[in-house]
Amino acid sequence: MAYIKTIDERISIIDSLDLGMQGRTSCYVLQDEKVVLFEPSASPSIPFLLEGLSELNIPLEEIAFIIVTHIHLDHAGGAGLLLEKCRNAKLIVHPRGAKHMIDPARLISSARAVYKDEFDRLFHPIIPVPENRLLIKSHGEKIKIGKNSYLTFFNTPGHANHHFSIYDSVSNGIFTGDTIGIFYQDLLDQGIEFYLPSTSPNQFNPKAMLESAKMIEELQVDKIYFSHFGVSCQPQLVFSELRKWLPIFVDTAQKIVEKSKDSSFEECCKAVETELNHLVFNQLRKQNIMIADQAYAMLKLDLSVSAIGLVDYLRKNF
Image (cartoon, rainbow, N blue to C red; front, side):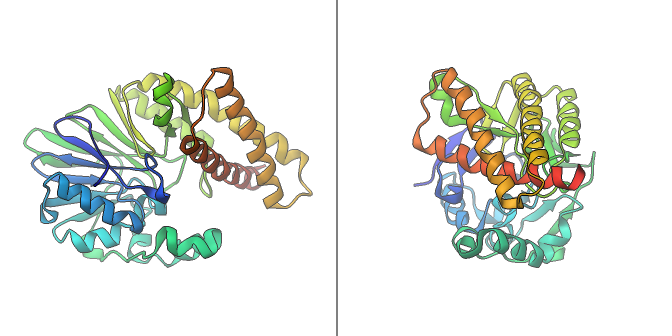
């Protein structure tokens, strides 16, 4: 049985069980006159998405568009496989990501270098997308999905240069991928809405991230649809938390990088990761938050990846 969460009469989440974790990655299903899927995740998630679509009584041939906010494999790795099942769908992608969906060789080699023996379990197969099934959308462009509804695409770098966010005119909400961070919904049960920036390599740029957040804030949206994980109805809290934590992440990493000029990249990343863990978990403990095993594992994973992105950015730019 698929893990499905209904947001409203148009939008649902199918949990893609990315990395085998429940509540890790949201695949959004938007049912208007046209059916749209956001974020198919990696190929091992596709069976869960197909099961979810079946439970929602959505025939695969009725899916018009599959949208990836950016081409990192936990968002877009399964797109080619899903397109084989959804014969009438087009994949919508950022202009800078399109060539890598057509020829994913560089994506595969980069991921193999990082994940090594775990690559196949986490991501295989990554299937090329035929060029005639791609739609490229640039900043400000729209697609109509119903008589009175449309999606608008906004270039939102910071997490990655090939990243856009997608505004839904009906819900006055925006699908933000990773560009303004991660929402830890598992902590809601303890009365806390907890958000952190996602500073993963290798195109992280804090200035661009804050500029993207400002642009989204100026849209005055009511909802933010996070890829990791779920929907926030408190956009101002999201923006304030990003503006609080992002400088902390960067300043913390910069101090360590400056002191560790003779250390290896891996040693420097580990030192930054250790300090970020200390800061984040201490903050949660001060708020008397008891961290369950799954939330702990997610936070540890995200902070590890964010540390790598911070060190990569700082060593390139300072």
